[in-house]
Image 1: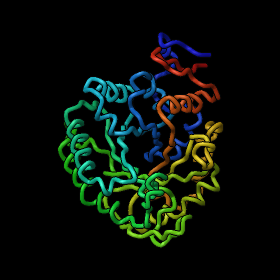
Image 2: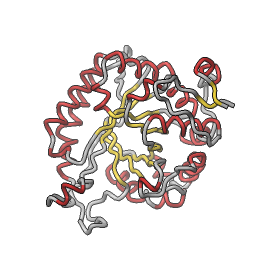
Image 3: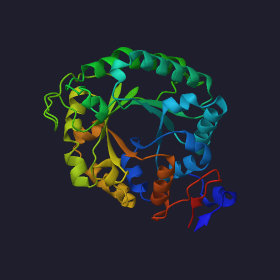
Length: 336
């Protein structure tokens, strides 16, 4: 049944340990991450029990978009961070990027200066923070492709942007924002690179474009979206990133999609969310010992916090029920 917010807090036991569909995976991964990408942070203001449900499910990192977070007022930003910290979430991450970021260096520089400056002034409680980029240089909008612009397969300007501009700013922040014990608040690796599984020098894209320009970057991790929904395919389609990880000596992370295939145009766990934990656990069993040494964990991609909330409810309670759409009314959660 559904419960009003008056009893919602009591209906969720204290998150002393994960329960539900990700519990076995959480135990299997140990210190490795289970991450949730939710993008827009603003709906989190209407979901006061979101982070408790997240921790209860066994998720340790929530990724939100840093750009809209910067636009929120200080009270709103602090509210999100406090909710996450009070719920016991270990890490909140900021993921940003667009296809034209390599050509928008001044904007990117300002973005990270402003974001890290604001985070320096905010209270994080027990939270760590993390940073990620999602710069799909190949994803040029159709209107601009028609205008004669297309991707030539060069990834060097993307790598240069991260090496010369993004990483140095994050290094400064990591040294500056520390806990009372002197430990940095930044969760390593310093920068996660969300990239498609098929990035590899010399590989030819479906459009016949050969890729080049990838170079190793220290203090980064490779987070590859597999766009697959079975253990066999997740493992098979992660081969390139597993090899890159070992060659570049950086950790790798694998992601799965929950946006419906009709929209994403790729295999998805939409409608089968309850199977995510089992599929990822089985995938993990297939890694070699050497691969496990480089493996950093999994991430689950969602459309937005509302959809993430629905999926978390399924993972915790084992029910394929849809939570209410919150239109200015207090949120409710699924209870047994």
